[in-house]
Length: 402
Image 1 (spheres, rainbow, N blue to C red):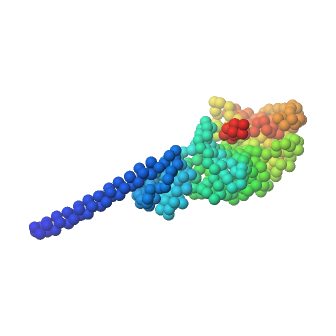
Image 2: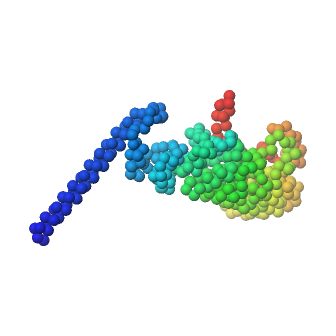
């Protein structure tokens, strides 16, 4: 190589180094300006609120930061504020949408309770595993969407759809968004379902199908006759427990016959005959599609699987029927009596409503297997043995009222 070639290389390297040093100096000066702006901004924040105006060009300078530090800032903001930041600028909107797919989700494995007591407002409360309230947020129709609130949260544990229209289509549709991570083990519907459609409910159950084990419709109001069915419940996959217990407070037990014509039938019952579960139950009221023949098929399938594997401790499977059109102690005994190992009639009693229960009305059939598994079929034991789950935070609300 000639000497003039070396000169060209040296000159090019020197120019590149000078350009690099100039760029580094510019970035350092820019960082110094941002640092001073942030320091000035922090001095104006008192008790979590901004006093005075933002520093000049603060938002413009802040938005010029690279994506990485902005992502770190988002990790420390409450979910509601992250959602609100999408309205600040197009860049923030794009960044938050991108981050929601890549950033680790905050775990919430206790309970989440939705309530819609007042028109236009949805209250979302989080509770830890000990049912101590973590945070409570109220959303209005014209503010943050529910789906935005959950972008950075991994919801596990239990979900309660409580007072009011908390399971209305507009809320279920948002919770079914593809980018949300919702993996509850228990889902409880105990509010007004008059604004809940089959399509939105099915989409939600498909969303939670990988994780849900217990599905409750306990004290639900205004369940449309066409809302629940075998194919809709089947969207939730294999369940350990199913309860359909519409609210009927204030009615005498003997008058609670026409509380609804719920179209859950034998297919849903047979899908729960898997005895590999630790425990299971099927508790329904007012279901028209279950038949004594379906109950016999369930018992035979359950006994076949129960005999396949012995266990050390006794496991119980419960079937609880109340006011189901085709299912009575007499019809079930006629169809399945040869399979029963024990029959128990419970005498006259009064429940918490003051209803007098006739001896022949409350009946329990028992089947035991050598494998130490036990099956109980109960009739009209509502509300004694239904495995109702208490909503977290009810005691706190009572204290607030007092």
